Image (cartoon, rainbow, N blue to C red; front, side):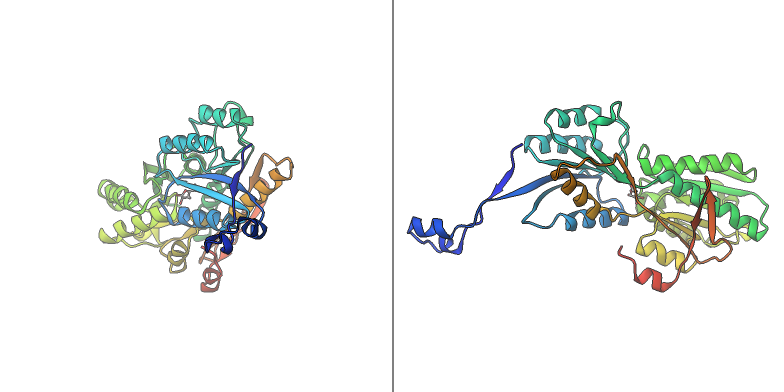
Length: 349
Ligand code: GYE
């Protein structure tokens, strides 16, 4: 595979030295950079910005890597174009955070035909042939959703709340792994808990603006009945909070007395600030800090090592309410962290 070559030109050359023999002697040797094309989803959320920063800084070693970054602006067609451009540029590796799971077979086949390994990160691809990508690293989104629902169930039990839980669900980008997993967990929990009702589901596209619009619409339709909003990320929760306040409703856990309870995902700094003051009742973490893991994977491939096909990142969960300190899911115990300002101060995003 062709490598991107850089010539480090010496100051002697730059200052116009005419003695070619001398210049040649002072010239640094040519260096081979590892060229990596990264197709990012967009810049729709705080989580996404943290992910971009993490990947960019992990690959910023200009003596080792040449990172070509492409922002797809939440459009899969832009990601497919970016992959084709990376193939034309003959990059060494492609990193792909796929907007949706479906629709990747031909683009990934083209990458494979060109001999370029594809590492998928964060969201997943659903392809007929799993050999079309080398490895995936990211979160267990369904587990995140199950942890949120189990916490809610345990919280209501602890409070002795047995009335109706009337839920509106602001989904992420439809077809994205984070949406598919978190939505599946909520839908299953609604089936299992007789007092839970799913009043409405609409996509908030993982953005604050759309989260606010969707919440306004839901408040208009369901009025006082609505007592819980399940947001699939923090930015949607920021938008929902704005809409709830503008409608004169209160956020909180006293849902039997008119408050609207909010649960969210990501655990960004602002999301956790809202969790610390009780505006968001529960925040389930999703880590965007996988940049260093990606350089490790690329370096391992450079050394000719075989990668595990899937790597899941570990994640936490935060709340200020002491009622539930852990959840038990599929035979495993998960701790719920009691949120304090110190916890927020130590966070990297
Ligand atoms: O939850 C959301 C972002 O794919 C896990 O995408 C990611 C999600 C994250 O826009 O904030």
